[in-house]
Image 1: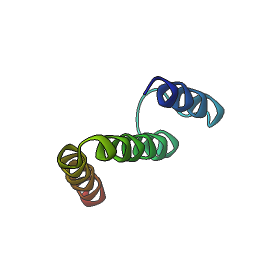
Image 2 (image 1 turned 90 degrees about the vertical axis):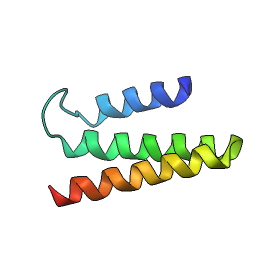
Image 3 (image 1 turned 30 degrees about the horizontal axis):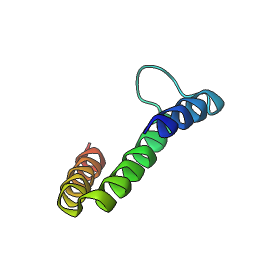
Length: 66
């Protein structure tokens, strides 16, 4: 998780993502990070991983509707 956080911070800086407001770069990177966390949690506990997958899916559907 610590390595993933450092990688996310580095990619946010390299991609010149905005700190506030709507930023497609930030959205893309956070989605990738959430998907990776879900994958890692799925390995340890499939039930938790499945729940996180459903949460992420619902989040993406909600954002699409906006």
